[in-house]
Image (cartoon, rainbow, N blue to C red; front, top):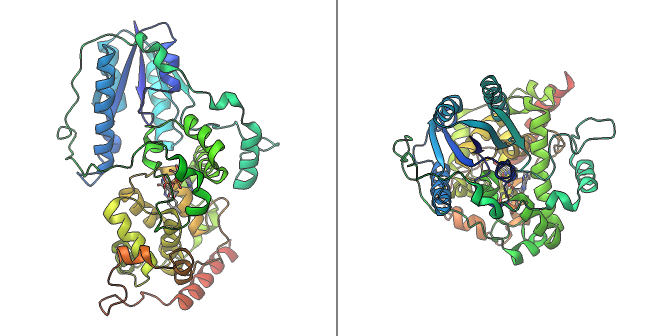
Length: 432
Ligand code: FAD
């Protein structure tokens, strides 16, 4: 008999909660991974760099496991088909996995667990991708928080040294099931081609993080950690990172708590995936002009800071947080385009795309989210540029023609757009 350790967004062997518990179960452990066609089939870009990233990480894990005389067992198909396959292949006692809080994932896990139960196989899930999850940070009345500041205060109250303790997985890797290498499906078999392979490093940049509070708001400075993609796929451990963050920079640690906040929101309020957190915001009469959306996507709105952000995103798969806020505000307020359009565009392009954080960021910008900026606060893109890119270094890098006659005129005037946004928003909210 063996137990399976199902890896998903925890693609590492060190400090991995589910793997640790599986290794301590007393049964040999087979690590498994599903290239899930329910997810892959929705990706339209066949050179999707996130698939390339995952593929590279899976190859590295395989190399590591082979050193321990073991092998990752990788399946291409649906999770249901994968478990049918593994149950017929191994004598499976139980499945160990780490929790994922997105609605698709929770439904998938409920269905897999139910299916396994019918076959007499147990399903155990663990907290791994956040420090505190689900109901660990609640208000005194037992309800989840919807405002960040009291949530983060309570998060800090709840935190103990135990929560940051790393799982000593390495010590137990001799408990892996010994078997010869199982070959991985190729990227082509998965229906993809190799995308550009230049990914942010996962090494912790101590001096950068120590200065984070002073540098993080300026897009021309390399002042943020770029660890988003590693947190998304679990190639670094949040426990290890948080421990350093708490020691090195309070502001940085707070950003990691924002990440937990949005994971908690999506768990308690899954309606946010398709609807506004505050339901009355779904009454807004979005203009949804496709030509203007196209100008936003291509970075040709005539507002240099907005265009620089969109071009950075289109070229690199990254956009600085300050500029994510500016471009998202511009789309929803200045152009009155439904936040879901922008959210979907970011989801397609961001290397660090994460449903909870992206949805949270977009609903914050649109004003429809929990703890969002009040709707009447409309970012002025020109003032934002003067404040956060005063030497125009970032703008010049991405929009070199912005001072030339070739640069388009603004798609809307700021003052008129602001007035229009206030009218449309207040009309929708008045009638709610
Ligand atoms: P750092 O500034 O170095 O922060 C470290 C880590 O903390 C990040 O990697 C991230 O995991 C977390 N973090 C930081 N800020 C936030 C935040 N506001 N909310 C949640 N987590 C945060 N973040 C994503 O990880 N994926 C997304 O898809 C995403 N979409 C966004 C969309 C919009 C409209 C906005 C306004 C923000 C979005 N963010 C998203 C949050 C933030 O912009 C990114 O996490 C950050 O820019 C990533 O760069 P970094 O890794 O250098 O972050």
